[in-house]
Image 1 (cartoon, rainbow, N blue to C red):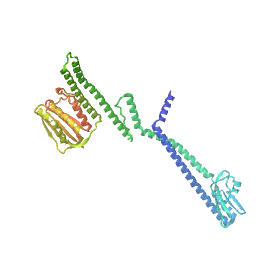
Image 2: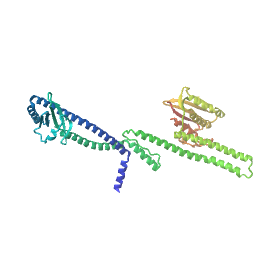
Image 3: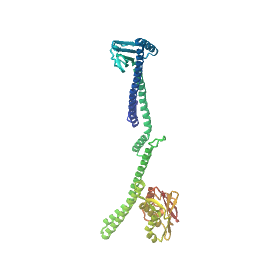
Image 4: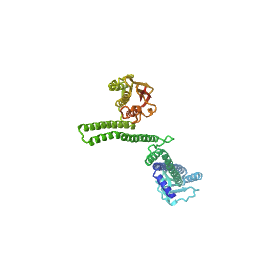
Amino acid sequence: MNSGIKQRKLSALAHSPPFKLALYYAFCFSLLCVALFWVGNVILTNTIRAKQFKAVENKALEYRAWFQKGDTEQLNARMNEQSLQAGDILFVRVLGGDMDYLNYTPNNTQEMPLAELAELSPEAEGSEIMIAGEAWTLASVPIEGTELTLQAGKNSKALETTLSGFRIKAMLIFIPGSLLALLTGTYLAYRFLSPTRKIITTMNDILESGDLSRRSLPDATGNELNSMIELFNELLNRNEKLITVTHQSMDNIAHDLRTPLSRMKMSSERALTKESPDKETYKFALESCAEEVEYLEQLLNILMDVAEAESGAITLNKKPIAVYKLLKGVTDLYEFVAEEKQITLHVECPEDLIIAVDRVRVLQSLANLLDNSIKYSSAKTKINLKATTVKDWVHISIEDQGIGLMSKDIPHIWDRLYRADQSRTEKGMGLGLSLVKAIVEAHGGKVAVISTPEKGSTFSILFPAK
């Protein structure tokens, strides 16, 4: 069983993205090393062979000079002397006409291939001349004033041994280097891709548990992919908020639809079950149903507006506008309603105060606040609409002298469908303030309220000044 678990772990590792990435990296690294090794080997081989050929050619020129001075005796003496000192040139040959002179290193332990040397052409030269199955370096130079050619040669066995040693050492470095590159690449890829593994783990946890509050934690090492985790968490936050808002909206809709639908049902049943229904009965039932349908339409529209704003899906057409125009516009809209209750509306705002907002949405928020203030204010009172700038915020407040709020109600007045006890005397849906809060927060703003029972309330909305 343990062997099966180990096999599964090894299989998972072999198919993991970090290992695959490291394998690709090691493969590319190996190809690069092979290319560099091949180029280096070619350059080194050609360089060494060229230098050896040049050295053999120089020796041939030197021996030619000695031969010209004293024929073969001087050449024998000089070659024997140098060969004993350096063991460098293995043979020298003078040929042409009737001469076929051959001399080789006297202390050389290697048996000279005399028969093969005797068959060499006078023009033969190069660094890879094969003689008796071995590579030799030959240089041939003509002897001026004669038909003779002096040919010097050296066995390239030492050269090939050096090159073979280089190749072996390169392979000994290349193989461990490739393995080290694979291991290092796996480690670095595993570490670099840590955020992606965390995201995958979080997604699996959410799918298995259904818990939308799960989040991935960024690496403390400052991984470049941490921004991906942050964006992923932000996406989860928005999705969770959207799903929560959707659930709440569905619950609220189900709750609020029950009462008007029950009324419609009762009105319809009353008209249908009446023993002798007349035209007026049907008219009254239809009017009741029409009122409830209108109420339902308003309720659904407001609920959708609130849900859209709270989920961040609302589209805002932000443009710079003077706050004074906003306040003046909402007071003009409610001027006749206020006059019916003999309520005075007073606007106090600098005319050069500008904010960038969606005019329609903000007017909708201000209208809800002013409508509440008028609705819950006593006759012959005053409502002040003020706007000021405090640090980086534009404060817009609506101050009334109405019935006020209890301290226990203040934390809940922004919740959907919440209505304080003293507000139940007036008709309403309990959605106005929640819509105000959603719209203001969609603009990046804040809401606040200060209220004292029987003395009035001050509702404030704050928008970023910039």
